[in-house]
Image (cartoon, rainbow, N blue to C red; front, side):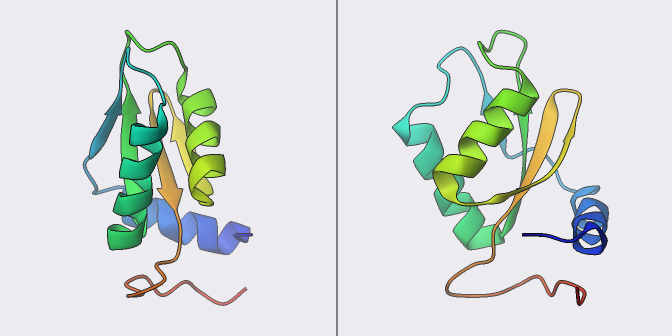
Length: 98
């Protein structure tokens, strides 16, 4: 569970990131969850965008993916959201102390 201080730090880091995933009309199948899982393992912090033709809004998509990948919701703003999960192999982000 992230503290407010840690969540704010991750929000700052995510500000310059591009959305590497897009959620569209195909929804949130197993393949999508797997892609996010792989991305979180490689990067720890990922940003995604929910397209207008999606059946989900950003909050629903974010929470579904977070549950499926075991990640933490960092932020949801408009149609974009950011997820964080510490990598098992290579830790690239040092979080501030709790």
